[in-house]
Image 1: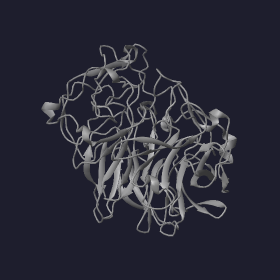
Image 2: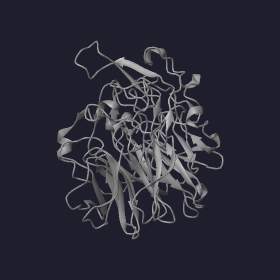
Image 3: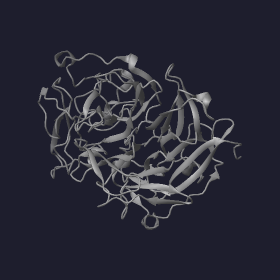
Image 4: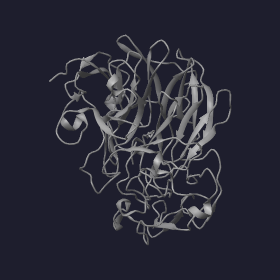
Length: 505
């Protein structure tokens, strides 16, 4: 499991946060409305040479996205993706020395949220609806009545509507994640476990008709009262359902990219075949780039060493999920086959679930792949660096926030090999990745709590270039995955600003 969103991810982004279980410090939750807004340089975060990281706000509860209005006012979305008693999603406005809640008439429209963006006088945000589907709403920055924009997107499983972006024509773009890790529902999957009892009919929905290979995946039925009960489940089918070889497509669907043109009421399918298209960003020429989460070693169809990836968008393209990894290679390749002890009985990881020829599909176009990250880095938000300003040497490059792995639940094979917990830069022309900011220390980056520091990165979940030209990094906060649950720590979300200046030592 990786994050959603996201993402998000990004969620998910924040899919790991969506475990909806764990140990909660209730005393900290009672104090959670107390935010601190005070600029102080961080001695823990290693910024690029000639720059420093400044901690500008702290005390947030698992924030997921940040944006600015046309006057340069900063807004932050607290996601609610980690359930904490008495707390719910909220939009915060940064004032002088304080963070204040944007008042929403009738309260927030759902229990979880991911993306936030300002456009044409409105704050747009993606959120869960009370019946379990997802949508997009908007509200004026001063607060007031919430207006529906998109409703009843079938994000009823692992992943959701993630980050939001507008193009130059005022069209809203958003990604919708998959319901499952790799196409098949499992009662032993820790992320499926969050929703399978409430929504036993939930499953992935293709965007067009598919012919399946006919394979089903058998496991002990963890939902049954009898320990000996077994369940057989096929791809794109509800739990305990198998045998279907022809799956009817529909729109809206899961694992897809959508756009909503200005003045339109219904979103239009723009591309599909994604696992979790968390992040979206337009370059100066108006070309769209997509950041996606790869799969995990979990469920009855585990995938080994699937990276996160960045793609160029191509109209109507199929990007290969669930039979292709994020790097657009087949999941049946040996590099992605999890060991036999993780496979469902009778499977070895070398079986596709879609009959490409009968479905009228061909292998995804690998020229659309821009770059891939380390497996389980958990890409969050991403943004292009504009021309000019203090970061001009990165002009035209993508900045990626990486929430960091959620091991061992996402990768029990390599629980000690850390990935993410940093911000990287990517040259879209070459795909070359380079470090932009991370916590100091040898080896792979680690959360500040693991190196006994309080002023560093925990899980960078979003990154943006502010109207002042500086880079802002939003930190999700401390969240420690375990094999069966998670430890959560309220009030640990932060906002950092990367600015010119000497670093602290």
